[in-house]
Image (cartoon, rainbow, N blue to C red; front, side, top):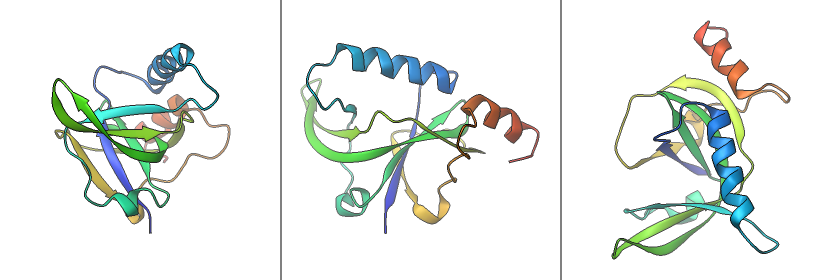
Length: 136
């Protein structure tokens, strides 16, 4: 069964801002397969479960807002320290918003606890407004 990773998206106020920032990073990349990565200090111990269909869920402004499918966990070096690069697909999938308190680093998110994807065509901002009204 898939296991997900939950991560705060620091410095971003909206899902559109995250999408724009990632699009700019993708434009700078070369090669046929463009993948994004987030480097973190701690390496997940449950690698096989994560790579079995797991996603990186982003918490934006106190709400789980979107996910991106994880394709690999690679060794990396950041500031001279061993780290882990969480490699994920560029597809940003809005999810039904759910409040989540702040935390440091990342957290595991069980598949049963993950919010569902929003119905096709519903924007992340619309989902945020519906969640604020208690309709999602």
